[in-house]
Length: 126
Image 1 (cartoon, one colour):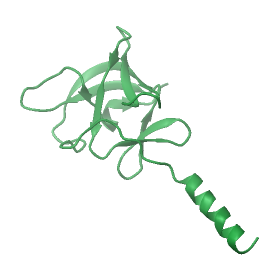
Image 2 (cartoon, rainbow, N blue to C red):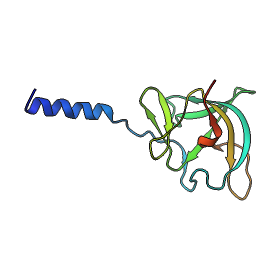
Image 3 (cartoon, helix red, strand yellow):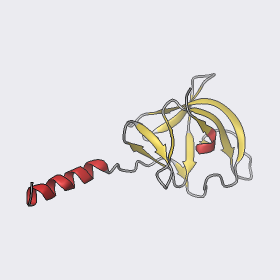
Image 4 (cartoon, rainbow, N blue to C red):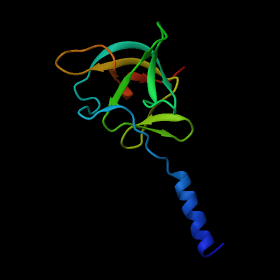
């Protein structure tokens, strides 16, 4: 195939291969693992593309929802299901992964939600 038809086909294929960045709730002043003092958590990463926050944690004890905040350069993409990636496109986590910790940031030492979570606090589901 040559000419305008080939150019159109190539443009469609390129557009289909580029995945848009989906915004996660982030802390613009937090660069993973800047200032991280960890606390233990026992949760499961949950997601929904119809939820404005995209990802949250389900507490494994209470089954309650816990909000999460991500480092400034993290975003979500929906290639083969929602997944979290960092600014360089490195895969960080997905639905069902374990949330085993969170970063405690700030002088107040607040340990309550929303929790600051990054790659170091996630583990793949077994």
